[in-house]
Length: 102
Image (cartoon, rainbow, N blue to C red; front, side, top):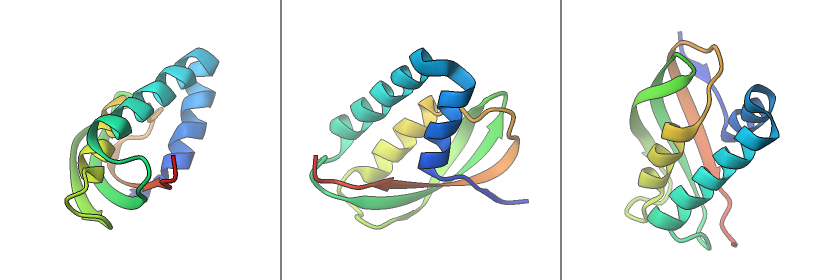
């Protein structure tokens, strides 16, 4: 069964599961992934397909990228490595929106 989890939901989930310190760490990881791989002034939406198990995402692949060739696919894959997923398990789709303007 496919489950859709949004990046915002993932961030909210990370606050609930890891507390403020863990959420801050996740946000730092997210910022590093974005600045390392893509231009923060640009915007994009990326959909990932991953397997959730043991509180983490694994085996992620990019299903769609609204700004191909601009590095948002790599940024999304990097963010997925750091995203806490709680007790979700199985195949999940992760939509990530990078708003740009930073």
